[in-house]
Amino acid sequence: MDKKIVIPGDYLSDDVKNANDGTYVEDGKVFAAVYGLASLKNNIKVVPLSGRYIPKRGDIVVATISEVTHSNWIADIRSPYDGLLHISEFPKRIDNDDMAKHLNVGESVMALVKDVDPIMKVELTLNDRRLGRIDEGRIIEVTPSKVPRMIGRSGSMITLLKNNTNCNVFVGQNGRIWITGNEKDMDFAEKAIAKIENESHVSGLTERITSFLKKEKGENFEEPGYEPEIKEEIETGEEEGKIKDTPADEETVKEDKSGILDELLGDEE
Image (cartoon, rainbow, N blue to C red; front, side):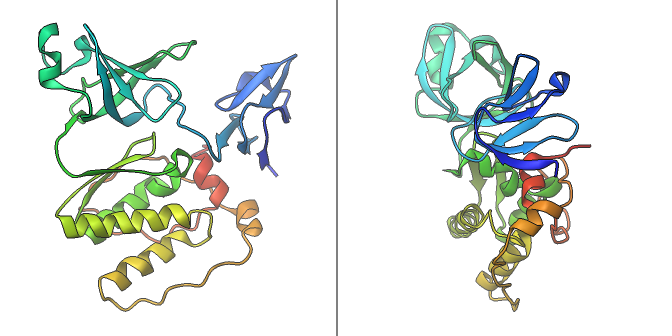
């Protein structure tokens, strides 16, 4: 079996050239650095089952400003490490004295992790058309390790939520979710998100959430029962596609039958 649950210090492989996230190399061997789900196929990596978000270059996150300095905004990104947003990474030229007028403590932004250096200095940027200040809607938080299940195979769960709640939904890689819509629809979306988080370990999640959404909307749909045994799904699940956000007007996706480990570990191809 090429996937298993590991704890820090567990031996994974001698193939040090393929060591990836969640691992460390010592004496020519690869070991687990965190408690999580290990993938031993192609890239050797461990996806944490718990703990705070560890930023990676290229992640899009929902960051909340915690301090304004002379040339940087310091942001809480739900990580042991602060995010630093330099004034030059703001989408328009502004004076240092005016920084708080454009982005102040307590305000949130969608930001891109531009770089993470070896000592975990996390640099953020807003220089992308997808990014900017969040001025409406709600921000809710889920466990960062549940993000892949929140997104689903190739954005399947996000599409399901958008199509059934009339809300726009964006899931940051740091476990903050930004939703917009009217108050009633956002209540509905928040309730569905809580159900996804609480039942992310249960097989048949997409079918279960589809049933919940339709039942809440008054449509007839028989809710499936809980699967008492998850081990078989863990051992035989299919590969999950790439994690991405998808437009609200796409067709509701087909049932996601991928295995739980594969959904958390991502695309191996």
